[in-house]
Image (cartoon, rainbow, N blue to C red; front, side, top):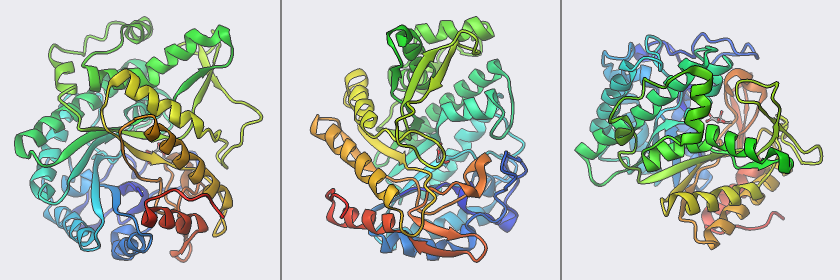
Amino acid sequence: MGTSAFQIEGALDADGRGPSIWDRFAGESGDTGAVACDHYNRWREHLDLLSQLGVNAYRFSIAWPRLFPDGSRREQRGFDHYDRLIDRLLELGVTPIVTLYHWCLPQPLDWTERDTVERFAEYAAACFDAYGDRVPRWITINEHWIVMLLGYQLGLHAPGRRDHRRAVEAAHNLLLAHGRAVQELRARRRDAQVGIAFALAPHYPESDADRDVAWGSDGYVNRWFLDAALKGSYPDDMRERWEAVVGPLDFVRDGDLETIAAGNDFVGVNYYARRLMRANPERGPFGWEVVSDPEAPRTDAGTEITPLALTDLLVRLRDDYGDVPILITENGACIDEAPHDERRIRFLYGHLWAVLDAIEQGVPVIGYTHWSLMDNFEWALGYAQRFGLVHVDYATQRRTIKDSGRYYAGIARANALEAPA
Ligand code: FCB
């Protein structure tokens, strides 16, 4: 199971934490992360829940502004907090999988500035020094494409920019930051693994006439990032598309791509849905749009539920990028049912079945962490969107394990997929 710091912690001023770009960012819901699941105070209770749910691994993120409140000054109380949390997980027999950057950027920093890459490398190195003896698996950065798209192109996430050129520059710096962190880990430890978590979506053309745009959008969402991290190059077709819109990508310097591809022990896959593509020359910047099948089942956020596309995605990763191990770092659904959430149970069964199918076809999947342990602050969409296996009543902070949580626990304990009753 997975969570991220800003979505659950609250306590934004506790123990010297500095502000992050999300603290005051008003998304369309108007909600903020000021309290969230009060995890900074209730973390012991939440780890007990994890243990009750029988999982053997937990993916969580560290809030960078707790460790370096202004991006460079060190705050020991922040370090101590995650120290206790990691120790407790190990006592409970749960392996920590730590994400270094899940969008919680110290307010003074900005991904369009190259200097942020070095600040990140320092932060990553400090985390490897502090926790590297106990954390076997690290994820550097979560969902470069979403940060680029929502944070810098559409302005829907912090820092709320709308600038295509700055967006692709921010994405490049995020990739570079990943590579620099990998180098820092390799310089310190040989016994820990490091990877990246990408938001990936398999693409399908709506009709034969849409094949080109399906491939184009695959370049935008998937290949731009996968090729950089796994092959050390940006795909030519997508580079041309970007340059037609924003001019020469001259912020890509010699040696950057070698750094980006410094070596991944695994690739983290965040999978929510496929993308069905239609050409639409009116739509900027690339002349395509995402459409959906009116017949497809949907989550309460309107996202199509497309489990079989996950098998396609995993098989394609193996076919195009070789045998790099795959960790499913996120997969989940916004479903507003609790505690009897039969639709989430069906979602889980369908997607785990799809993963098993890929494994049977020889794809090296090394793990699956469902999104999310509990309902939480869903960024710009706030608290109305519920992805948890545990329900959170925000008025009372009461937690209730949903039926899906019990179903997941059964699968985790048996380490075998059972069809729902
Ligand atoms: C992903 C994010 C995660 C959560 C899920 C629903 O894009 O990585 O934090 O918001 O979506």
